Length: 173
Image 1 (cartoon, rainbow, N blue to C red):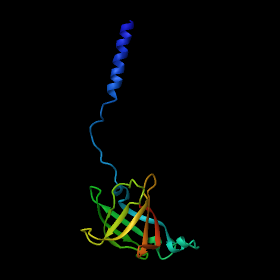
Image 2: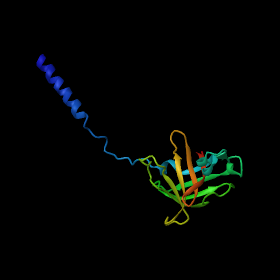
Image 3: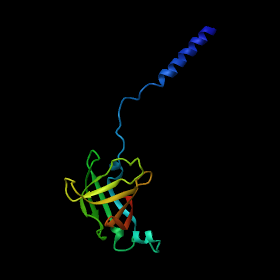
Image 4: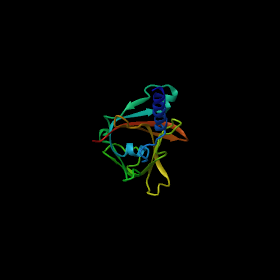
């Protein structure tokens, strides 16, 4: 009886140990890219203009919310991707002031979040060869549980930032 229990225990232990080394079903799933998360049409919920010179000088006011001015409530941006979730074209809609290119081509500086916590950039191009970026938008918040996207557009002179536009958007249903 005791010998049977020992043998049974060893069989169960062997199954337990070898069971831990079994692989999954063998299928590989590609990791989710930022392209998959931000492809689509985005509607503006808020835009803020930050005076970088005032911020650096500790002057007030250093920002202003522009959402209710200059038709910014009509702002949309569509980031198109192909069937493989690769970036193709983009188009800005609405009648708000043109702070960056109205349409063209786009890609990301990295298809995944940067490991050094720096912002991934949406690079906007006027040509389909994507040889020279016209503008760059820094992604500050990616869609997750909520379908929201935030990006910043910073204008510089002689490598000194003087104004930043902070966009908050939601995915169009």
